[in-house]
Length: 383
Ligand SMILES: NC(=O)c1ccc[n+]([C@@H]2O[C@H](COP(=O)([O-])OP(=O)(O)OC[C@H]3O[C@@H](n4cnc5c(N)ncnc54)[C@H](OP(=O)(O)O)[C@@H]3O)[C@@H](O)[C@H]2O)c1
Image (cartoon, rainbow, N blue to C red):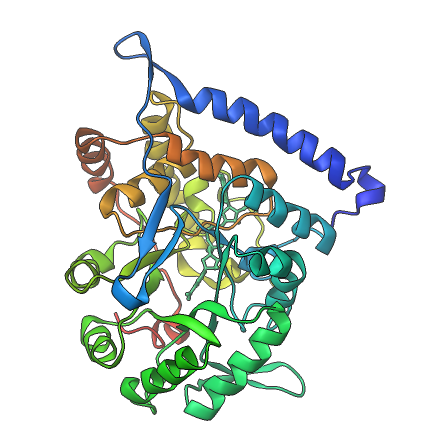
């Protein structure tokens, strides 16, 4: 899709005009919804626009839906050029997103550079929060990923210093450990992060894909602001232990891949071609042709459920997550202005308890085909 502003005749002005039009239409249709079943027009009550991740000294107020920046130039197939992405990030700020998620490993490095170029001035003005991650290891001369994890204290410091430079910010609002390093006790990791907080280089810290035991050990050393793990309608493991523990300890929860990497957006099917260089869905079991074909039943049920409520399948997926706990802040990623607006407009809807029960009842009878990760990646997560 490599968009070229000149070739496509899309400059920033045109981009904003187009997006504003889409936004206006989406906004109007999402505030007033025709409830076909009852046959009347009514105004829905909005979900609170802001949420808090963490508590006490480790809390941060953010928009109830954040923006996952990874797919702007990594792992989600063909991506737009840099100026398009930067315009999209600015437009996301205009539409109320105040949480932007990136990582050292996206690119690697280039996603942080893009976020820095697009958002550092807005961050310096205090309008948004940027989160990033350390923990994978690289040959830093070539950028080649190594198979090992690295959360040694000196390595965390090295990554944070470089992330700060690439992001062009004075501090990172929340720094996550991307994956556990089995060779470094979590206590040592958190002690290092606590020092970085004292030094003002990061404001808060979080952990990804860890189990309850690790969360408790970390939280004892310094309060965790947020856990970021996979959570969506097709992968609900965190509901067993992690979400209740977050509630008990006052920790925020950030579901990553909340639209299941696009599958729950209703725009993929068994014929979708995942680029084998820039799209990691190419190797994910759930996205292989036969699995995708079978999983369409699940997606079609969500489309059908949304149809009578005036909601798209992506909005149903996000609203379902938001309904789970008040400290849940999903971070969908997109390269499309229309999708960015559609996603944040989910906040104009409210799924009732009855809606949620009905949706879960329908989906409980539809099998999900394929694991979320291949074995090599499953080995890196704790649950
Ligand atoms: N901590 C971790 O280990 C980890 C792992 C993975 C991801 N993450 C974070 O989570 C963020 C999101 O994850 P993700 O990109 O894997 O998955 P996602 O947000 O569930 O899905 C992104 C995909 O959905 C499509 N999409 C977005 N909005 C849509 C809509 N309204 N309708 C239809 N399709 C839509 C996008 O395509 P278009 O571009 O065409 O809209 C994109 O391909 C990442 O950016 C990253 O920050 C963290």
